[in-house]
Image 1 (cartoon, rainbow, N blue to C red):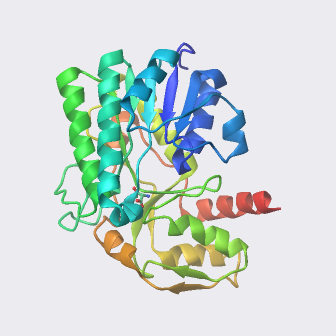
Image 2 (image 1 turned 180 degrees about the horizontal axis):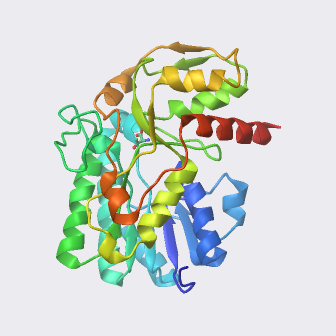
Length: 320
Ligand code: AKB
C-alpha cells in the first residue's frame, strides 16, 4: 500500500497508543523503517525486540536534529505528551512538554523537508461552553485544563504551519482510548481501562468518576484504524487541518460496569469522584464526527458490548 522507502519516527512510542501504533506501522512499512523513540526504554518485550529504538526527550531539539540526520525520516508520528489528569498536577511541565515538543517537531519538519506528520489532539480541546451532545467539528472551544489548552493551541499551530508553509500535518481529536496491550497513564478516561483489569482480579472497582458521567470512547483497534486511515488518505481528502472530531461510542461508568457484569455477574463498582470528575464534566458527552465520515470514510467497528467481550477475552489470555 505504501512505499517501503519511508522512514518513520514515532515519539512517545512506549505510551498506550504508541506501543500499539509502532507495531502496526512496522507491519506496514517494515521493522527497520520505523524508529520508536521515548524518554525511557520500552518495558514491552514485543516493542523492544521488533525494531530500532532511540532514547529521546522531545524538548532536546539538537538530539532530534541528530536523529533526523542519522535516520533520514520521511514521516513523524509525534505522540509524546502529558495527559489531562497529570497535567493538572504539573501544569507548567505539561505546557512545556506539549507545546515546545510540538514546536520542535514542526520546525524539524520544515528544516528537513519531512513529508508528513501525525499529531494527536483530544476531546479535551472542548470546554464548559461547548455543546456537550454531538459536539460539532466547529463550535465554541474554551478548554479549562492545561492539557486541553495545549491541544487547542497545538491545533491552531498545526493549521498555521499547514497553511503558511504547506506542511502535510494530519490530526485526530481522540476520545478516551481503551486497549488491553498497554496501560494508559495520567488521563481522565483511564478508568475505562482499569475497570477491566479489576474485574478479572475478582476485585471491586472504586471509580473516580460519578456513575452517570458520559464520555466519548474508542477501542484501540478502531483508534489504530482511524490513525492509519487519516494518514493514508489522499491529500485532497484532508479538508480539516486543525484536527478531526472522532468517536466510536459514549458510555458512563455505570454502563461499562453493567456490560462487564454480563460476563462477570459478581463484579462490583463503587463511586468516589475526585478532581478528575471536574475535568470530565467540562468535556463533551458525545461527538459528531461526520466530517471524518465524509472526508475519508471513517466508520468505527466496535461498540461497548463488542469491546467488553474482546477486552475480557484478551486480558484473560494475558493473565493465564
Ligand atoms: C485523557 O483522558 O487525558 C486522554 C484524552 C481524552 O485525551 N485520554
